[in-house]
Image (cartoon, rainbow, N blue to C red; front, top):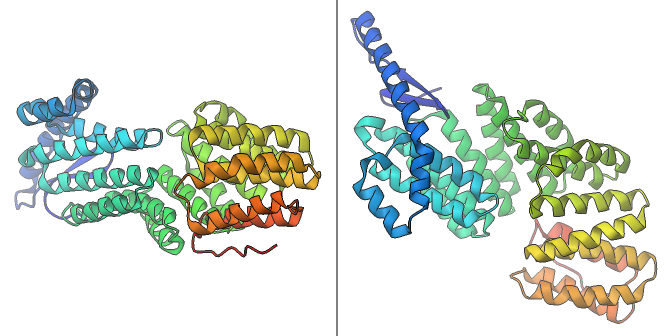
Length: 412
């Protein structure tokens, strides 16, 4: 690992190492540096212990009051609080990306006010880079892709002014890859992840390497390469520390189940789902449970359990509708439509189309997907929504989600 400059050097979250200055009198320099290590470790421990109370004090106040506290009270300008804000930014963004972005901006303010002599200018640039990458991730989750691009651009500038720590680079690359995946730039995302995985492996950070492998599996699934994602996920699950990040393990297991289902290995998918069920139950949030129900329905349908599949799809569709996620609502609705078409249930098909179209067309959905939905509605109204027609619309929407320039042929 390389690093620019002297002084305190960050190698890993929570681990700080002091690099002694070069000196002809090495023994004396070493003694001084050992004393500095002890004092710095004690200071850092105190700051981290105090950080949760400082964060609570900040969040109990208005934005204007927070600004005044940061500007006028030195005890809010600590490395411990900066670390905590950045960590909470990433954690919070999963469920509340707007609040996560707010925490990231607070972290930037703390970094700007922190004492550069005390913490080191380059190391503060590293933390700004990480804060910007987390802000970019929060914006990605909010579908603000332009704003996310701006955030990662800002982060890269700070990274170039930082210590040159490879760990910081790998964390940044992993998050940037998620944005490139969201922009459908799959080759670019895979290149970033390959570099991140290589760095984490070199640093012997197995858990982080596993996290990037899970990210890689998502890119492969999105780009229609389910078969390639399976060995990647098995490798990831060997590296992930379950007690450190159980949601990450669930993501790996869910992606594995999805890949097996895409490949029509329904019995293997069912076994994997049963093994993962305790993990699904550990996360009762709507985002997790709706996807759990959906994949369970897909497995049931693949195994010929049509009544169970229908009940599960209805629950998942209503869940996505309540979440305000039109694309997933449409995909689950088309799973239902396929069942109804196979059973000749034209009345249910018409009701489904009537419910689906207004929800889908009221959101910001790309034009080709809207054409496909309109085609589905017309086919249903003309009572020509045969199995092949519904399957064509469903397959198009699945592919177009990750390839928005894909054209739809709207001919019956």
